[in-house]
Length: 424
Image 1 (cartoon, rainbow, N blue to C red):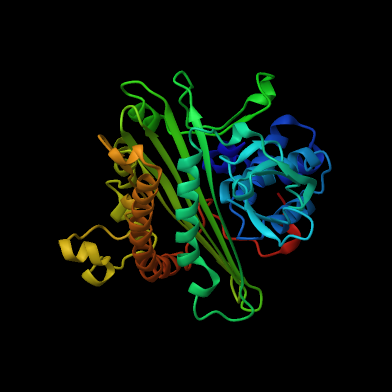
Image 2: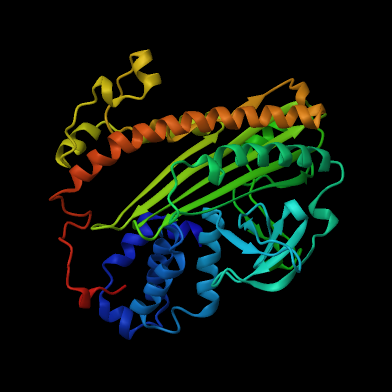
């Protein structure tokens, strides 16, 4: 589902489908698949906190009950929620204050069921309404392995303190009263068996009847590095999700921070991989979205991604698109100016950067020391990302907007502003 939604080729395959096919032959399997690809794409790229509205618009435009049935909509919403680390509010118990939970793949136990680590609860929610379907109940002890609990608890305490200091309401100044702020953090733990399959894709074992537990994805390169030499591989996942919105000023923003920590006491190896993402949306007098993402992966993965970013005809393509602003010193981030680096304007090699791969790490033997090690790495990388974000928003965003003026879309056709003709 997710691959189909994010694939450009699959999306473009459905763009040129005649409207009559969508309207009259909605039962056709190929047409149905193409149209659903478009719906998934819109859902996965919806503005912060506007997923439900986007799906409702798709449902209205499609006007097809077979296409937009309940199971399909729940699946689309579930994928989008897991991808964006969506928040959900609930009260852990009667008379207790409302707290924020995170929907993510690592904390997912099954369809509509998520783990809330701070209180060790499982929560069943509806993706359509983000409301509880069942009262919260205690989580199974298997969700919190006893041998890994000291590490998880130490990282949770340190990570929640870090998030509270850096992303709390008080740290966002000046903040108008109309700005709505929500944030949550969580730390998950899991023991990977020695013969567990290495995969970067999530799988739902319950669909095959093998188990009733959802199996989250993991980094194959990280697992291979840590388990080299034998021994158990432990995994900690720290997730943070922050939402800002101001309906009066017509803007919204979402920041997420997701980190996976793989380590082994036997081999004394440590790996930290993760992703920092910022999405923003403004709709006053115009409609624009920005999706800024930095991934921290293995050196090999970062090198492979870097090789595919730049192309020989990039300069010609940028001139054609009207992006002829030279890459002068003031356009470079501080670290690039210090090194005298002059990259071609628009080149995005830094989207994928190296994570942390360490051998002979004694900190893995002590939960507190490991938590400090992890937080220091996260703090350093997020500080670098913040500097890159400022450069991105001050340089790439304005130049990109200028290049879009009077430029046709990829289809080569001008946009049809007649609202009556807009259909999926």
